[in-house]
Image (cartoon, rainbow, N blue to C red; front, side, top):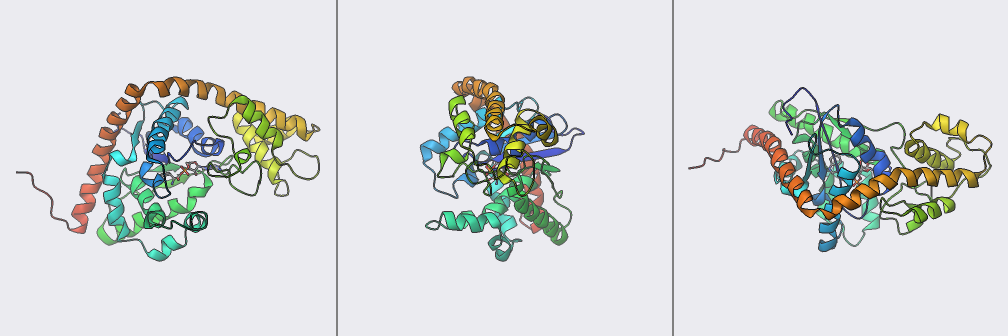
Length: 337
Ligand code: TYM
């Protein structure tokens, strides 16, 4: 893909740790495909980020291919967008190192996700877990990224990326473009089906709390049937109705409508009927994606080729920025003789 055109650069990434959820789809993947034609897009499988929590190596490898297949099944077109594996472009780790030297420990200590992960992985609070947002900043800044579509949970990390870009530019001269977040109005924070005050997460111990992108129609219907609702019987969006609001959001995105329209559509309906219809909308949204993914996932040669081409294309852009950074900080350039 050629990126030296008029279009601005958009970059995002998803970690290959487990099977993505409906939250990842609604908050991120669905927006990637929508924005694909308006930007020069770069999408990465963030495998370096994944190992900040323990991973089974064989599963990590399988999940990496699986996530790549999911990107493609969701409609990312490798002819238009660069798709690559983060660990294939060593500039990410290299820039992260330099950015570490302009990042304050206090900034990382304050990160909400770091604090949460310290609790959920109390036996493995490693440096990578803390440094994770700096690597994410490197991912973004290497490509002179304009726009970063993410779910609301990544907003704080994006603010750090902006701060680091500005700080580096101030200290060493104009080097990085300062990225903007793209956080959709609807679906930026899909909540757990079991505890609607908690984010839907693939690492939830309760499998009924999340919809996996691989769930079959029976599992999806069963999970929506069990989904926690709120007191009262009205189907309306509101702070006092976290369960129903979450279901309305999911319905709006999956049935290609708006929350307001959905409220009208279900005015007077009971919770049971509503939950059934939400389940059906999700089944129908995921069905074609799952079918495409199954086919694509079988073609390892195709996936390998995409990763190889993606890494070469990404590398060309990434190293241009890294060379600039190395020069600015005063490293002697390597001469090849
Ligand atoms: P990850 O892999 O946890 O999640 C991938 C994307 O899904 C979004 N998301 C959600 N959106 C709505 N509702 C939810 N319940 C939900 N859960 C997850 C996330 O906000 C994210 O957009 N650090 C990133 C990956 C990353 C990255 C980057 C993103 C690495 N480098 C550079 C952007 C730019 C992460 O862990 O996402």
